Image 1 (tube, rainbow, N blue to C red):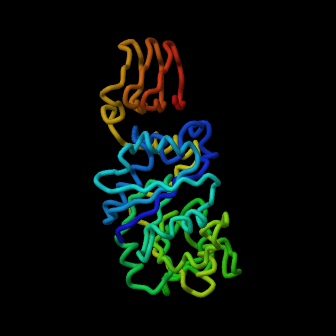
Image 2 (cartoon, rainbow, N blue to C red; image 1 turned 30 degrees about the vertical axis):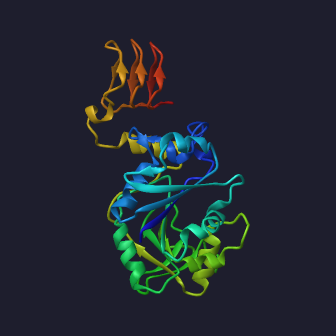
Image 3 (cartoon, rainbow, N blue to C red; image 1 turned 180 degrees about the horizontal axis):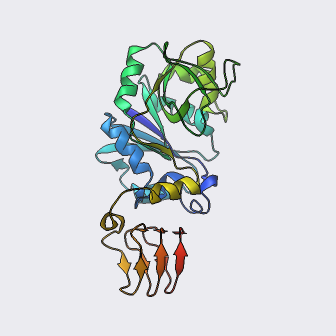
Length: 289
């Protein structure tokens, strides 16, 4: 498992207005682009090469990764003029995938799950894909049999059950799964997974240990920041310019080169890198971007 595909082409509609000028995976989380957490998790699992599909605000990727690499790992960007969805995005990089198994990771997922355990489960079983799952979550739509290690259905598409586990948006697949994805069509990867499940070729592993959260909405984005246990020093970038007469509580996040004016009263707020908060602003649980 040396290659990973990071899904980065979505419109980020649920995170608007934060995504008006940025792709969702580049939205700052804990003062870093969200996608860096996915990249770090993949590298820790042994990934050496990345593919990222782009669509919304594609030029922003070159700004964040000007040499098309991250921590010594190469990144190949695949621009989609028309959004191809997850299945079409995978089919579009078939040549890049080649004959290698590939790890797929949603760009808006923060995860501390054991991806090496996912890889080991995939190696030990003859499945076209192996899904990382949780026993609980906001959408338990994967029908999973722990005894056989098989995912029997997704969203009850095959009538085998409404779902027992949360699919995390992280999975390993064999290139043969791409045979279930039609050429040149806008289609979800879930359709190919359902076809694999119909033939009992779809595997899974439950990974409840480690943190996992889908940061796809404003509510989850705020909650993740406000429940983080980082200290005030860790939350405030050294290059931030905070007026001596500004008052920020310990739950605020302040990014690099942010500017906060005099007489500001901020509680549980997130100030993005480079953002400016006008003097006299009083706010609670707001995002300044």
